[in-house]
Length: 145
Image (cartoon, rainbow, N blue to C red; front, side):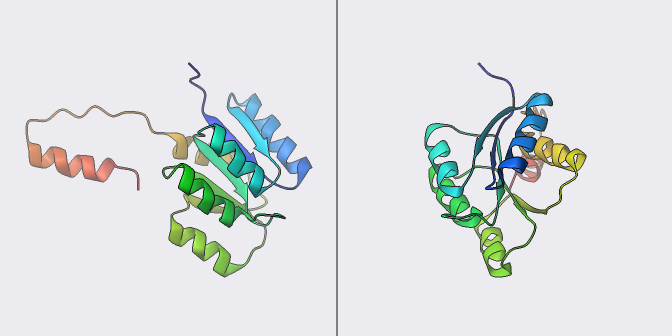
């Protein structure tokens, strides 16, 4: 059993893709890569990932369209879209569909690591209380949207 956080990095810029993969692997993550949206969708047909970092602007299939197809395969997928520039309507459609977050390039590595950890942080929480109303309220507030 693999306890490492699994990350899929998707970007058509091969240098950036390799750099992200190298940095994340050195930080202890299990990392796979894809160079376009089609490749990302194919990877999701074979694996589930804790977090996906995906560029918005890519050839063949942009990140937003790939995000939508991935959500059909894995509805609870945590996908972070990355963009240096993009069509506002395209990005708005991703937000409307429930993308985890959108970050602007260039990306500070320390901020990215924190975001990955926060996004993948689905550790179980044990809550003990004999007040069922309190339990219900607490549980509702702890559920990730």
